Amino acid sequence: MKAGAPDVRADGAGLRVAVVAASWHKAVMDGLVEGALAALAEAGLPDVRVVRVPGTVELSVACARLAPSHDALVALGVVIRGGTPHFDYVCSGVTHGLTDVSIRTGVPIGFGVLTCDTAEQALARAGLPGSSEDKGAEAALAAVATAVTLRDLAPRTIDA
Image (cartoon, rainbow, N blue to C red):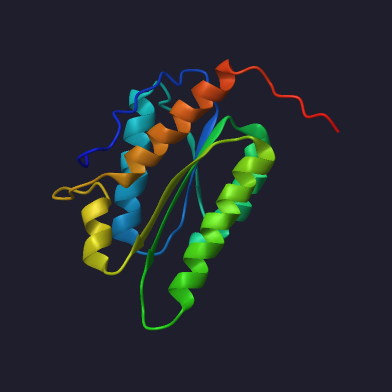
């Protein structure tokens, strides 16, 4: 775990959680998904749904579809900077899209989208043997811990 990162733990037993993962950069994505699934199993969720989408842009719409029937979602993807502004558009779009889904639905989404300058940086964060970080596990634990916190909060009413 990275220095300064919180030690997040939660008992998610009974929660309905899904992992939504992009398909680009197979080695990185396999590591992120495996890390997320291992963390979810450790949090009391051994059987979660895994949904694969083509790319990182598609994470938002898949999460929007799944949110009404889940207590938490984990969005996993990787975007590696290239020579065009595409990187900026994808990173901004997915960040805003996932945030919008979470706020509109009240369903926490663990943000496990790697935004890296190089493939080496992505591999270092993918939770693979030799990786320095496991962002899939971190995103999964953040989603579960937030779902547990929200479950324990009274619903807020908004005066119109």
